[in-house]
Image 1 (spheres, protein in one colour):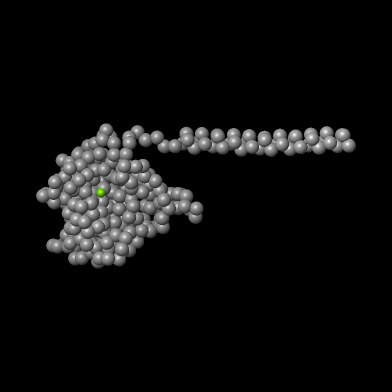
Image 2: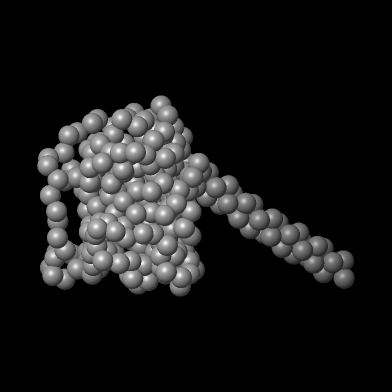
Length: 275
Ligand code: MG
């Protein structure tokens, strides 16, 4: 009896000991994993909207030229009306005015968004900041082109108007300044030609592909297949949250009557792969 009792005690002790070993291993693995995750956390050289971030060099673009829509494009604004658009987030008509082939933001009427949803795409858009507007940093001359209603390419007067580099015209707002600054002066038309590829998420909302942007601004490459850090945020680091593969294109009413013309889009298939 005594031997059995001793054996039982030994067996129990070794059970407890192996349980503790498993716990130590699990805790150890967690600590190593946490350390690894921390060591992989991205370190940024500049804060969001950091005024010490260098201003891109000014480049004088070549003469403006009209880039008419190619035959396979969907015309989003051809100068007649804004029927392809609605007040963002609703079915109500877009509240901006149209005159002489030009759409003008009616301040306070709200952002406008395409009625149709788009995924990966090529977009052409022309925009102008009227001469009479007073621009001071982000105020007075601000709009924006958004993909999926959440990823903004900044539209702003960046000719003689200084602001933080990650908020100037052609920036991926709050993330990446344009490589150079080819913005035309107020009263002149600017063009954006964009290739946007949206992010992809898996079934558990994890990101499997980040969004990328290529931007040619007045004929000058300013964003070269740049990976977005996440959805546009003001004064905070961008992060991703899961959304469908398609969404509206949105134009921002920031309270300033900027003008637009000649907007078209070409939906794109998957990126080419070598055969
Ligand atoms: Mg904006």
